[in-house]
Image (cartoon, rainbow, N blue to C red; front, side, top):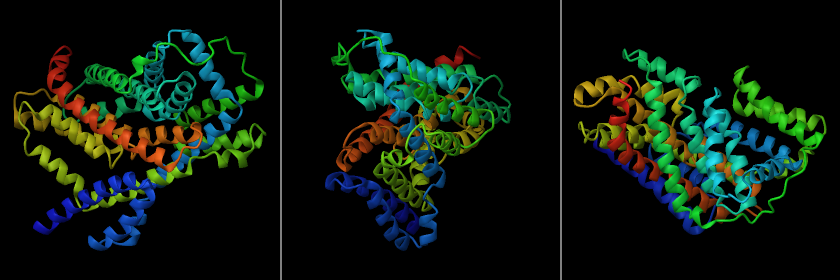
Length: 424
């Protein structure tokens, strides 16, 4: 047992050192992570096959499919024109843009699709809009994602179906209104903090020309309809997000909307390698118990006062190595009733709200879909997006995810119980 604990700790140290070293040396973190992983499996008694299995084919499909589709759409000028129309709608009131992006994220996710389809749209639009106006693109993309993180908890989303079913096994009904309220409050708080951190308040006027943009061309409308087709394939026919994007983009290039060769060159391959490579090393950390070590340390100090924030942090840590929708929520939601009974003095529904927030907000990490798609959007839209810039954005997103967990600790401890009490 002592050896295992040492392996746990060593794995975590290797992971942190890899990220720091790549940042200092200004090299692609993904390449270094795979190299460290190849050495680590020999230290931990694992195999190369286990290392290679850590390359997420699902993440690869998602990143390549979505970035290729949006490269096709962008090549027609449709995304730029859409961003111009958003800017034009706000006029000189540039401060409305972060609010508009948050609301857009909330609506796109909340009307039924949930977070995954919304993630295919919001980061790309947010980054494009931010670059035109002069806002920090990471800031606007994060605010958009916080909006969809809140919207995913309406009662008509796939997330609601999973959570409601999991809660029902514990004998708790009608959980979504309280969870939605908690999730909305915490995402609004974090959005404001992100706006302040990136000094969004300093931009008082847009540096873009605020004139009424012209209409979409036929080619641009067809390109935008490709995004709609992707959403229909995902929502109606339950097609994987990456595969849906490939189907849609294949039809667009087949009909001559954009040259596939040029669009392939526009893909952010460095970013894709970074995300997949870090995911490989994180899988090794998880296999030797590094994530469990962190979770165990957190649960060991759980009391009636700390149970809610610690459940949120635990859900966030688990979400780093698994899907919130497929693993975190089905696994941790049913635990909330038992934990509430063991600890005492805490509402199970407040614990569920914390799990919902933690499982979602950790998704802005660059190792997760939310953060990875922000990186991909940056790689597609920012000219000469160097490895140094990639590493900087990677670390910023990682720190944003960590900061979100800190905010969860504070906000959930102070507000979740009072909010939940309004719905009981």
